[in-house]
Image 1: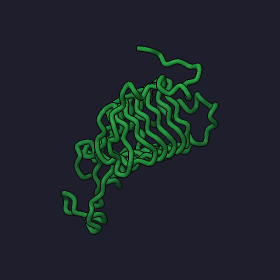
Image 2 (image 1 turned 180 degrees about the vertical axis):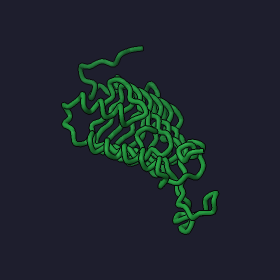
Image 3 (image 1 turned 45 degrees about the horizontal axis):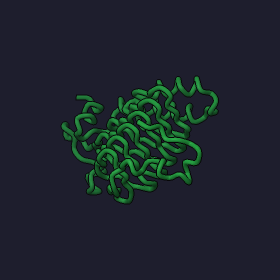
Image 4 (image 1 turned 45 degrees about the vertical axis):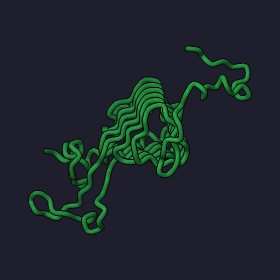
Length: 213
């Protein structure tokens, strides 16, 4: 089993493995290339994202600067808007659905480290050699989600379809679909309902209209 296969199996892996380091080096270089481009250099930006990410949907826009640790382990859907300073430590797989809005300074993290300091430094691998290990848990964000500014999504979290995550939240556990959740640690505040429609906020809606379904 390769070290990358160990990641996806949820076991310990060595981040210093040469094949993993090569994947990360490619991603880090592409991050720099992307972030150096002007916003209107759309063709070049699109080309880099297709080379960097595991999948990128149509009409998806990453404002930049953005930083992906592996890149190839992240899949982003269609019609997604990602604001400034997006960081994805995608050792394990990260999946973002369609029609999501990601606020500035959002961070998604998948790797975990041993709690005891000596074990963080090294343990013995299968051959009995001292090795630095970690493991990782995938993150999944559903369709039609809005993550506010400075949200941190921790390893292993699934955020259901239609959720709103309040600014500054640290999401440590799964959030059920159609929830407004916020806080550190992030907790469900209440379900989102028809009463949250903009049609009940005429002072903001003005002369605009909600599309009735």
